[in-house]
Image 1 (tube, rainbow, N blue to C red):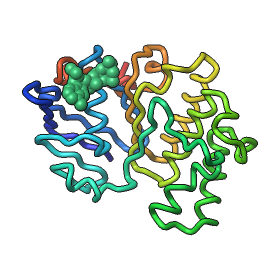
Image 2 (image 1 turned 30 degrees about the horizontal axis):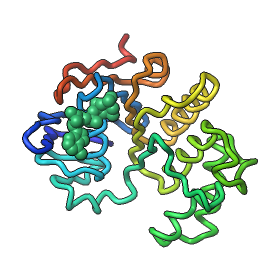
Image 3 (image 1 turned 90 degrees about the vertical axis):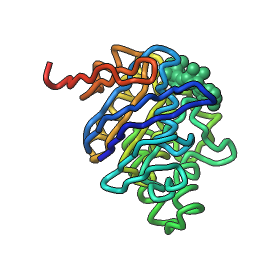
Image 4 (image 1 turned 120 degrees about the vertical axis):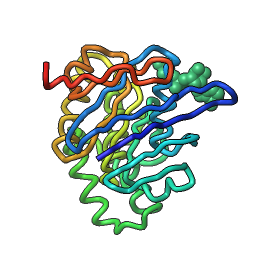
Length: 222
Ligand SMILES: Nc1ncnc2c1ncn2[C@@H]1O[C@H](COP(=O)(O)OP(=O)(O)OP(=O)(O)O)[C@@H](O)[C@H]1O
Ligand SMILES: [Mg+2]
């Protein structure tokens, strides 16, 4: 579903990604591990089109892009859950989820609402649909952010440090939600420093060291 091929990226003269290649299948979760500064966030930002890359390819479901200007070909195919959630404070939970499908992608409002209600059920927040982000706990906001990222039915869903601000109960809930995203056929890519969480969710572990992929472990085979 997601293929990254020989991806390279420099900032000024510093080469941060030195040729990274890996794949994530549909229904598979890959976890990216590596020391601070290894290039993990840069990698995930390149995949999401939030950062330009210098060379290499990103392929999603046979659509191939070789530079960031082609990123629009992948519009809506890749979802990103940000660490600070980035929810719209003036919109309710439900409005947050349908905002982009309706206002950016021109989807029918009833259809988008139906999908949003299904996703709220998936993240176990059906009862909060008319609340505003400030009325929710951090863990609940995180799950709204996941539902919102799923609203365009992306083929790839990326997370940067999804558990860093969460307690044990909320981490368990996120694990369940990620399992459901996998079951819906998404390829899930997660950066985390949380080894216990990684152990729970990872089908595959990708270690990045100084901009290079140094090890890939298939956790199913262990
Ligand atoms: N916009 C930028 N301009 C210049 N250098 C950058 C930029 N973004 C990242 N870098 C550099 O790229 C390197 C990798 O950063 P990155 O954020 O990808 O690391 P990381 O693996 O996500 O680390 P952490 O675990 O601390 O989040 C660092 O040396 C950083 O200083
Ligand atoms: Mg980072």
